Picture 1 (cartoon, rainbow, N blue to C red):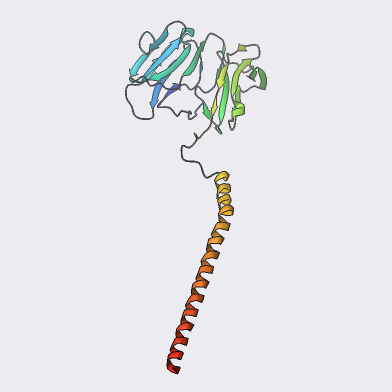
Picture 2: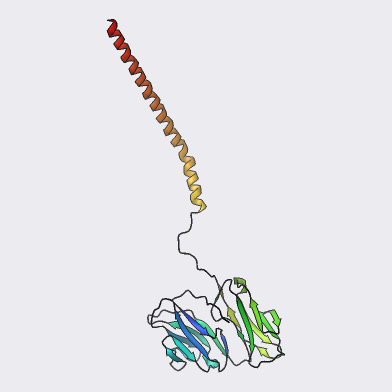
Length: 247
């Protein structure tokens, strides 16, 4: 199951193989995928039996500071796993279940993005061509086939839920939660102008227009009066000149 995991935090805990359920004695590789090239990330876990402990402190082997390998898993290894930096920054947490059951459901360990294609697989500890595989979501039967696979072609929030599977006459898996997240986080940029700002602009135009028209009208009246006064003055000046000539 090859999927690009959804992770927007400083570091992602990558699980290989990419699933959250494992049989006893399976091998798991846990790796801190650092988005900011920081240093000091280590894999930690919290289990019912041993509490919170880092890799190599009684469980797992670390080939590098940010990678941890569990060679032979046991049910006691079930718990929550995450990455933690020297500054106590923490990554996403991943629930991992190690089971003694004869059936597991292979589903993505991390949330998947909306629109992504997802394949769920029902896997038996002992393979048989006679197996009939049944898939359930939130306690309801949703698919039954002989391939052991259930495809979600374009994941959406409605596909989010608790999935499990069973094999006719061969047992049932534990449940695993499939999380679906938005493919693009909300933008931090300023939102576009809302209709309220437009309505306010219209309000100011309607209210301010009469005052603007009044100002223009007064200006025109003042201009006409000034021109009339100038014309009268010019006429009076001409009359004075004529009277002087006559005298």
